[in-house]
Picture 1 (cartoon, rainbow, N blue to C red):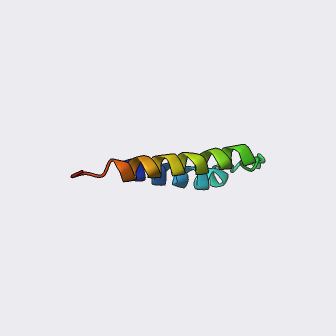
Picture 2: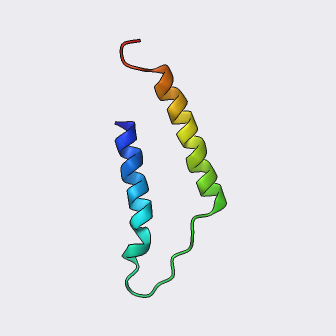
Picture 3: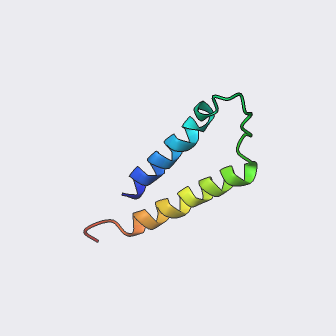
Amino acid sequence: MIGRTIIALSALLAAAPALAQSGTSIPEPSDAMLFGLGFAGLVIGRWAARHKPGD
């Protein structure tokens, strides 16, 4: 379930530049946001590894 949410969120973020059809410039993601997403991925991955079904 968490994996599907992360995939959907990443697809939404990847498609964001395509939404600007009026010529509006869209800023690139900041380094802090990229770092935060990476850190969140590590935390979620460790949590998921510890809470495997059947353990």
